[in-house]
Image (cartoon, rainbow, N blue to C red):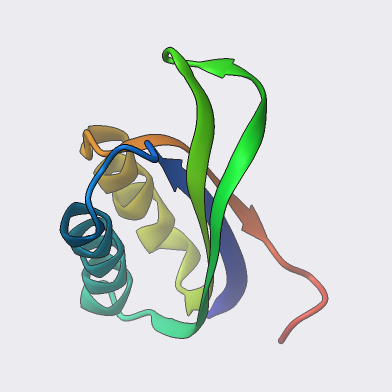
Amino acid sequence: MKAYEMLFFVSPTLDDETRLATMKRVDTTVTGNGGIVDGVEDWGKRKLAFEVNGLTDGNYTLINFHMDPAAIAELDRIMRITDAIARFMIVRRDDRA
């Protein structure tokens, strides 16, 4: 398994229940495909560098995890179809084993 990190943000107008459900869905997708979640950091509300889908702020979450590279496509698909997620980025980490 390779080490990855994923950063995503949701609209700051979403309630905590919806935001936590989104984080749970991501966690379930990673573990359901044989991955291991190493850590989750809630960065909170931050100002965006530019407007995205009419948003100027977003609630950011950083997730570090290990996963088989073949399963990343499924995680990417789930992130794209989740309406609450405005933007996301998955990056492979070479500095972690």
